[in-house]
Length: 249
Image (cartoon, rainbow, N blue to C red; front, side):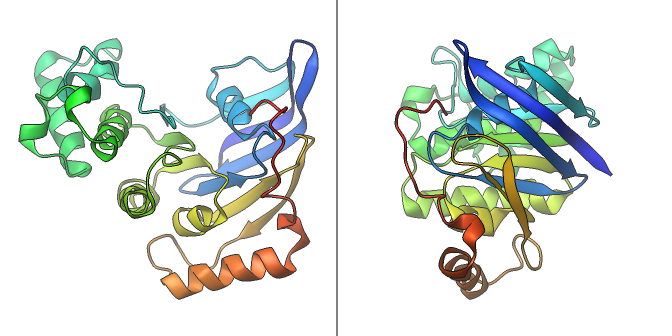
């Protein structure tokens, strides 16, 4: 069953089209990675799909109950503690204070935050810990769909891998659906079930590739071999490392 359907989406900034003729679907229980060159409109498409931006034309059909979003910047409230940041969305969901505390504790445990981390403010946390808080904030609202807008780009390689493992454990292997925006094909091969490629100029989805097996069960060698073959022999991925700084992402 399709839980996110995007049909004939077009979006423009200041009269200039940045997305056009976009058709995309995410199935229940599927993490779909969207890759493409920097500046081709991947993040814009995620924002349109999540309802943060209104498209110029086209339709977005959301068949899930509740979604959350994890951004490249953790976007934590600097004046709020880790616990308060995790529980921020629960106030708007009208969750009782007692249940709010339970949800915060549960989400913190899911991302391996210690009780001693929860009273700390963002400035007291490392970059990896801040991203854990952001993931816990998303999980606390108990979504069945998550949008990932290049959430680990700013992290170093080792920390990025730990965050990817966290996504696999809490989302991909937990039956959640999601759209994962990334420019890193290796990351896509680790955390997703399927990869879609956005056109260099945001004009349509060029194609899809199903990954073998499931996230978390592929060996490093399998992931590495798939990426190497995709970059060397699959024309679909020919331009994913191109960069155009003039385009709006």
